[in-house]
Figure 1 (cartoon, helix red, strand yellow):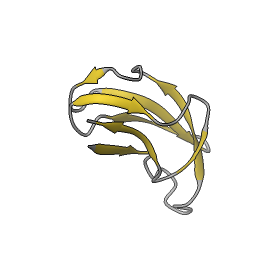
Figure 2 (cartoon, helix red, strand yellow):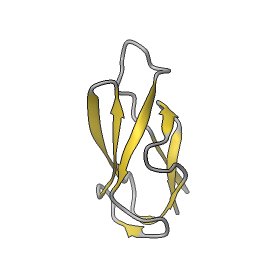
Figure 3 (cartoon, one colour):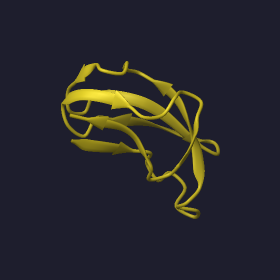
Figure 4 (cartoon, helix red, strand yellow):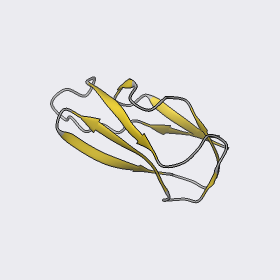
Length: 77
């Protein structure tokens, strides 16, 4: 099982929070390595989050939820 974490987009404040803006996949979907999973935002910076591995994804955070950088947002089996 592999955790997908909210990336550290704010280098000055690594414990800052951001928003999970959009999921590009559904809970239980089968994904491939490097497939785009989500878009996240911290302050005025946004980034896409790719799957680190292939497998079945389990979403841990809802869209528009506030998340601390480095926290798990999904797991891939």
